[in-house]
Every structure is written in C-alpha cells, then in structure tokens.
Image (cartoon, rainbow, N blue to C red; front, top):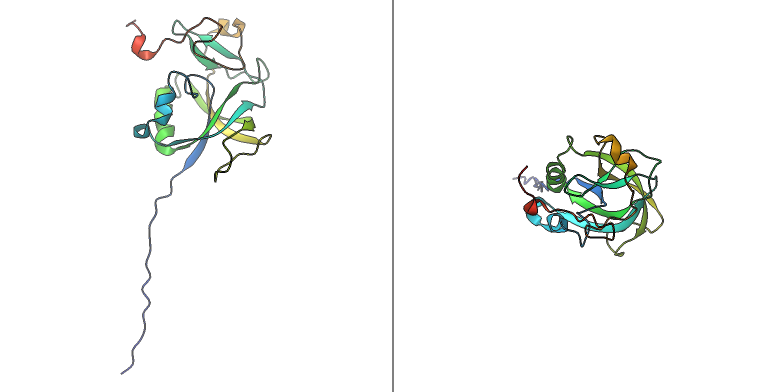
Length: 174
C-alpha cells in the first residue's frame, strides 16, 4: 500500500486596508474644535505622522459667518500653510469626504508637503525635510472677495485674528 502525502494548503485571507495620507490645516488639527472627530474610531482610523507645511503657497482664509478655514485652490499665492499629516483608512477618508461636503464645498486633491517633524520611530515615520504627497481638502468654489481676505500660515480656531470658529453645535438655524 502506497501512502501519498497531500500537503494541505492553508490560505489565510487578510483584508487589505487601503491607507491614505491626509493633510489637515484647520479645525481637524490637534487642539482644534474638530480634532476629536479624527480620533473617534467610529469614524475610522487616523494615525498622526508628522507636522508639515505646503511646498507651494496657498491662501488659507477664514470665511463665512461661521469663520470656517478654507484653503483656496490658488497655488502660488498666499503662504506656505502649516498643518498635520495623518495616515487614515478608507472609512475615515469617506467620513472626511462627508464632513467636508466633498466635492460640493471642498475638493479632495493631492498636494506636496515638506515634512517638519513627527513622533519618529514608527513604521510609517516620515523624515524631517522630506517631501511627500497627501490629500488635502481645498476649495475652488469660493466667493471672489475671499481672495482679498487676510491669509494665514497657521490656523487657530480662537487665534489672535478674532474670527472665532462657530462649532456646528453652536450654529443657529439659517
């Protein structure tokens, strides 16, 4: 009697989780009013990678009666905008699209960034001084007078500009 050995092939299926880099410059940054939404696991996963600034200049303005920060899609004008890079999963990316009313109010596009610093030591560490691409929520649908507004390189919801962000919960019905 011959015994034939038939090795069993064990296949383990691990779902591939697509991760994307997102640059936040406004109310989603750490210490700002909507930061908690980035850290809420019900919205998806977000991992801080580094502080960065845009390679190109952009006008970062504060507009509307709610004092919302907008990065206008007008490269070459304004300032090199400071913010934070996060690594997010598809669920968080979809949540951010919904939050930012993409593509109606904001449009998600790739932007070049200069890495300033990060926590270091992690698997996804970005080297200080390096350039990376990440998604940003900017807008090309704005009022013409927004181009005349002051521009900022670093947004703070309750900064010296005196244009305090009005949280969605604090807004009065139109």
